[in-house]
Image 1 (cartoon, rainbow, N blue to C red):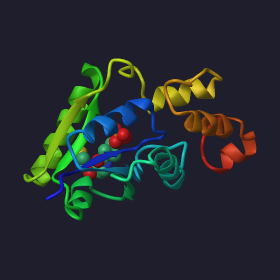
Image 2 (cartoon, rainbow, N blue to C red):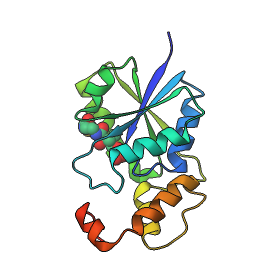
Image 3 (cartoon, rainbow, N blue to C red):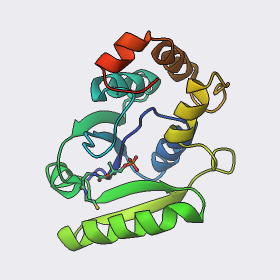
Length: 172
Ligand code: PNS
């Protein structure tokens, strides 16, 4: 039976840190489902559709990476697939508490599910979607930390006129 893992997250946007985790997970699992959450508690820069397009394009040549989205509880989404494992990347110690709570809650909701943590590679331990957005919004270079397609999309987003930014709900 093929081994399937779910890699859930906001991916707003996907970074080389995420990509590194997917690539390493593929050494262990036959298939990795990158599952993009509709997260109502977080204001996002890219729509879920835009994020899915970015991830799909980046992994276009990797047939064992599936890109999907989900609403609601992660454990319910995972239950609809044949995955038994959730993958999460762990950066420095600051991620631990949040991740430990989330993994424990998910396991309490479904004891048959396990979360596998992979240490982010040393080249990307300081990279997060949040800091990438902040740097890009201030005109800083993010090349080398995100694929060039993502860097281009970030530039396009932050070049939008103020009226359009207000329309889609984010501050300039
Ligand atoms: O990339 P992120 O924002 O750290 O990903 C967090 C995510 C999407 C994995 C998490 O918020 C999640 O699983 N959301 C779905 C709702 C849910 O199941 N919550 C209970 C877990 S405590």
